[in-house]
Image (tube, rainbow, N blue to C red; front, side, top):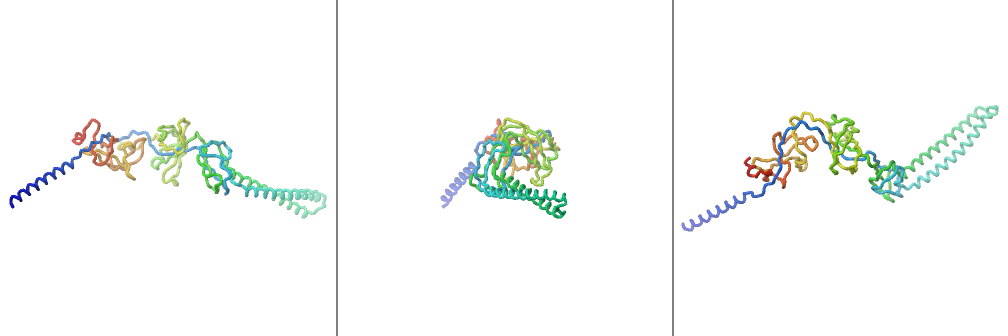
Length: 368
């Protein structure tokens, strides 16, 4: 029995030793280190620009609608077509308006006949009164009848003008030479009052609509020249601030401003996003911490940056960001001066991944 007990004890010891060795081997991380580029934070106080996002739009654009309800009989243009000022774009059935116009014309003819008759009577009684052949009351009655006939004729003419003005809403024409940017109706559709039927823009004259927070709006002046970076084209254009809103009541606390773009050969289009850079000196920026926007990691509503731990691994640190200065973002909290952060990596970064800088091994990084 003692012999069997001794053999079992030896077997258990060997098994435990092998399991412990296997467990130790599993804990060894043999994954390759990710090569990264690291920058060191430094306080900055010599920046020259504030940047705000905006969108390019045509300086001269119009959304055309109608005050009349009716079926569209003709929609003769398509998106992208070039049109001239006064060119017919959309026609709406105006049979009811035509009938009303005929009625008004008949009313004008009737009022004009009554006016001519009243005018003749008025002149005749003026002569009779001058010869003492008519009384003052008779002249007054004829004069009143003449004035009423004259007023009825003028009323009928003004009604004709009103009907004619409504014909303009059944024949939608281009208010200026431009390009069709949207078309919301086709022949046979029902056009409703206030509905946008056609949108047209004048090409070659663009502006940027940008929003500025209240902390910076007082530093921006009308007429200042700015740089406008068009992201889709990768080009920087020159512009001039031409309008600055004095109220943020209807814009969510953001002040709207317009930047007029100068003549350029760049193929800019309405709706392109742009970044407007204002030449404004930063205030109280001796302790400002700036990092490039390319280093920022976003997850939902959170923004952070990967830093380097003492053991040579990447650690994601969440930040509170402030204003944008060109391609840099102000860090309000989460990083301080003289700290290092990862700018770029040759592989996927995550918490705990081993990292190494070019020319430095991960072991050296960890010792360092």
